[in-house]
Image (cartoon, rainbow, N blue to C red):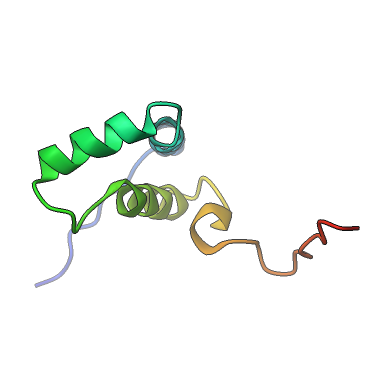
Length: 86
């Protein structure tokens, strides 16, 4: 069975990606502990936590073409890691 094709207007994809990034940043904010507890209760298991959710959000953002995957994969190809003692 072929996969259905879904198309988004560029502006809609950008808005969705920005919203996903906003949610991801909120999840690491000052209320992280309370959010983690609430999320654990909502999911009902320890198998899917905020870190996993943030990874999923980063993947979706990358697939929408909003970033270069740095959040998902670490530093970008060809990027030099900076020596913190330099």
